[in-house]
Length: 165
Image 1 (tube, rainbow, N blue to C red):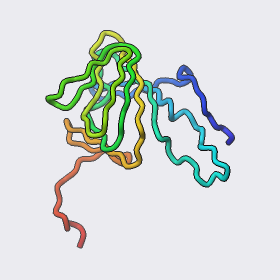
Image 2: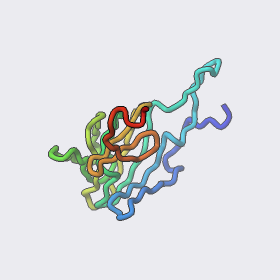
Image 3: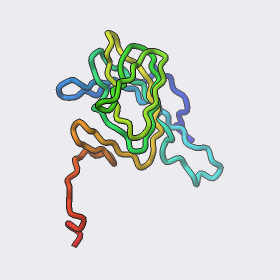
């Protein structure tokens, strides 16, 4: 396949930055798996890969920053590998935070509320590997928002037959 990219070095990729309006959330990301374009090698090409079965991202958080609002995934598993710095995997209210130090491996199953905060004095750097399920959605309990199909929204209660007849 022309243009197929099956190898990269993370030093070849620039950091992208996500920053919230008031600055509480700030993450620097390298979406490593998005940069790779290798497709399945099948003899007849009738069964091409339509999505990657996992995503890999390198994340860097500055001291005092959170990577994103607390949320949970409906289907997605996330696996974290801490490379440098110190932080916390913040959990659901009432659940203890998980410390994050170099060499730690942390798993977040579907339904576990979480986010990452840098509690140290230097950058917190970690990899996150996600299994990229097809029918994924997220819920943000602190703001009562949902994310699905590329949109962010809030739900409203409605009568079952409203708008149907």
